[in-house]
Image (cartoon, rainbow, N blue to C red):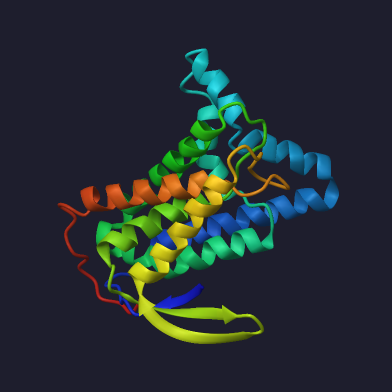
Length: 237
């Protein structure tokens, strides 16, 4: 089940959503450049700016809360492990991010996105606090966007591609079905992955970052929407 677009217009240009997508692609282009010249340099870069649970818990255990390890809760959100990784994340952000930005306002949405991604990272750290595998990707942040979208726009119509073996079909279904199905899959895969090393390049999928981000986004979505006035400018979204 792959969402392609939603029928949920916005009232302002999603500047922050565009900027986040651009930042992720620029970072990925830099990764590609490093990988083309030296795999060791790329691995070092990922190890430095990706979220390494063991390094974060060690730093916090020393009482070093303001550190480069803490910063990786945010920098890791802009790194990706491959084309499928970044394209999948950016597709979901493109479809669902504009409406959340429109509802929250730009600065509030940026804080929500980064904060949701950080909470998602902490959820993965909590599952495997001693892991030395870097966790990277916007998946946790995007999951927070999906959680907020589910609680704020559950009836929005989503055009979705359904794969049936060698055949496919386009259908339009409510967001609650698409995103609910996505979340259930994360739960199933997440609990099935317990005990398996997960993370970035070659390390698997950090399912509990997805789960944590989605739950955080659903809860924060309800809180942040209170007091956020409607946008003033009209545009097609």
